[in-house]
Length: 407
Image (cartoon, rainbow, N blue to C red):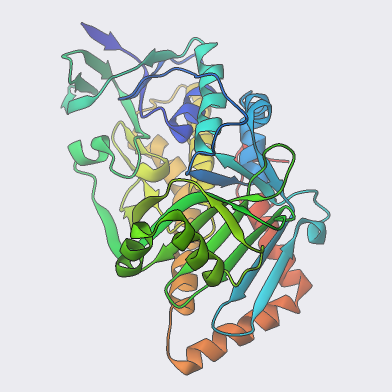
């Protein structure tokens, strides 16, 4: 069997699904394939939290609203937050960001990745987008002016344009020989959910320790504010030791590392440990090929911005493809696809550089650098306009925004 499409999107995660929905009224024949099952399971609001969450910006919310997926997310579970507190565990510097500083109601929402995925998949199942589940990509080669993809079960797909949305370890990127710049952070992130004795106050908390940043992100269940998602970035040696702890010992170590800002850590869900590696494709596009989301760039989870970058990738690429259709241009032309790359690569690189700078500054041991970061935090804390600029950028109120993300 051979399936043909105008656009093949490989990877039905959050970003790939968003792109497919953004193209559903384009008149293009779009097929979305994924190596796993594409089904929506009943959601239990009393169930334990998924360990992987995203900090969705206002721009991402607008994209999801316009794709019709936001109502499904709200119907499941999400946690809005209005403030962010960041402080240096080795000094006295701290900074507070607030949505109120730019006359906004919220800074964003903390949402489990599964909830976002199901909200998108519900809309896809109601659309005329072609969906191929359990479709594991095995081979990919050029065939004339098209790509020919062969799946593990022998099925074949053909399209002039293939979009790689298949994550950090992208099979498409590997099979097509796309080059990347990457390096190991020599750190690992422990991810889980915990219940604290004090309310999180709809605030994202982040402490920079000598080993790495520790974030407590607010979660909501049963109308309470005791649950948080934690992302603890630390050395492999400490991560291994922490993963060996039983729940009581881990809770005690976590509470100590967080300086007890939210009281006692009363309960700990199962932990996941993830190696941290930064990766960025040298090019996002080639003839008949485009990379989006984690297939194009993976950043440190310092600010939870990864999926927001991916949603903007999807929205910009969809916008450029629809414009090219209206002009009668060939979508697979690298000149057309480069318009997406020119709009997204500088923004992604700038944020990656900023996150790398933060990470290096806060892990620096020399006394002058410790003094610099403490002084810097104190200075920015006293500059309302500088903080407001950061908040506007995080909310998606500035910059080259696609139509789907504009206020």
